[in-house]
Image (cartoon, rainbow, N blue to C red; front, side, top):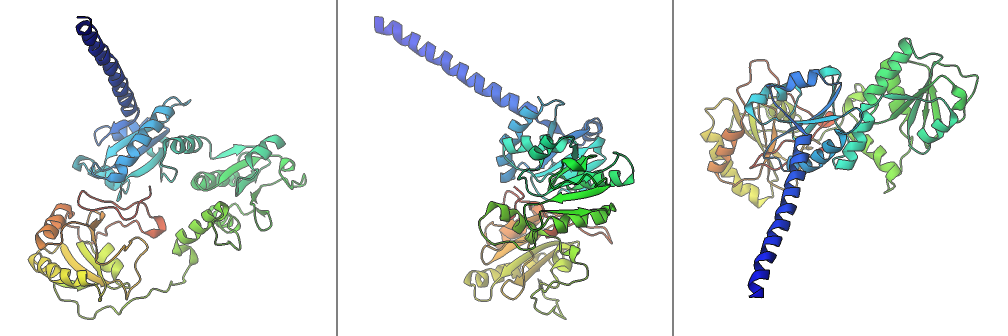
Length: 432
């Protein structure tokens, strides 16, 4: 009899404890979920207009990397809402048709895509910080503060400069005037890559000189001559000074963490910075006649025929020796013939062994199939290699007909973000 009394009590107690634990977990999940504002076309402009600083994540429900980021973004939002002043994190479903105009306005061609929006929407730039909760919190706290911090005593200098790498300090007799304003503008623009400070007392700086009255910008660095000065406050000139002086003359290609960031900058530097120099690109000749159902693309024509064609283009990268490519060839031919009456769709191929591949794209093997829509979405096809499946994929993901004279916006390697994916297409290049 005693057993029959104890057992129900034990079961009841277990249910109570389990229920309490479950409720706590649900409450925590709800609390985290509510920390991130959900915005859409109906409330976006109104909310953003009222904020001096807001961070918006544009995502797609099917995106795996978006799903990975979501809990970290929620945790960060839960911490930052308690910051003084509170920092707001929000999200927009960029794949929802009603948010199409927002997606276009903020040039969202990939997911997840995070924007830091300031001054009621007047200042917008891409987020380039960490993707874990702690990293997001630390990064955004810094980004929400002033672009340049005033240094008033030597102790501040030791703490602020120290071994932090490249640091910029502006020296000004007074914190006003065009030169000071230009310095602050450049600091705002480049704050993601460098730490900026300003002072009216040059004597507190390392290797300081009381005779230096400014205006002057001193760049401190842990290499070469250790510091460099500039008195040219033209914005473009100041940016160039920072980029040139802030980069070591020689970088050792090794695993030293100090060098890795310089190597990353070297390989991600926009080619436009080098003036009229034309980079060498290995390319087959552009075909004089290209009238077959499957169009031939080469390195010298890929921009015009793939990225900027204004069409929905399915492009196969193949190798002449690849058996799988040979099996796929008649299938793609069938696809091309089936869709040849659709003027907005192009089926193309490119020999990946005879042409340089744009850094935007990544080939893990042959064949690799990319699809670029008129909406600017870059997808990689990983579905079944049947004509029916490929045609269905194209119809599902193609964008609207481009207006005459329109160019599809393409975020290339010089400013690349993560490339979009879909439920039947896996991301091949991710900002995350």
